Image (cartoon, rainbow, N blue to C red; front, side):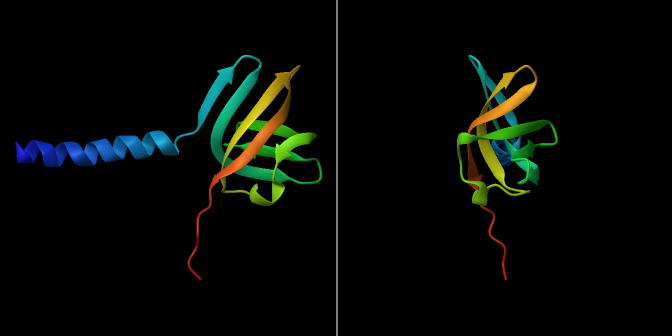
Length: 101
């Protein structure tokens, strides 16, 4: 019984951490929600690329703290897709990775 339990616990931990780390796309009406890693930031054009898949434009009225949005950060974003133009409604950093000095 204990051998079986010791095999089950690492498998459960592996599956739950993989599910959390993987990018997710969710559609809710006309909005798309995504959680993933930022791969590119274009501050001049106010555009962000998430997981090398979605290039979204940040509207001036969007709720976005651009100081927290940088390559490598995991973000959660909601955007609308109208005529191929993906416009952010809201975006925020999910976690900050702390590096040792």
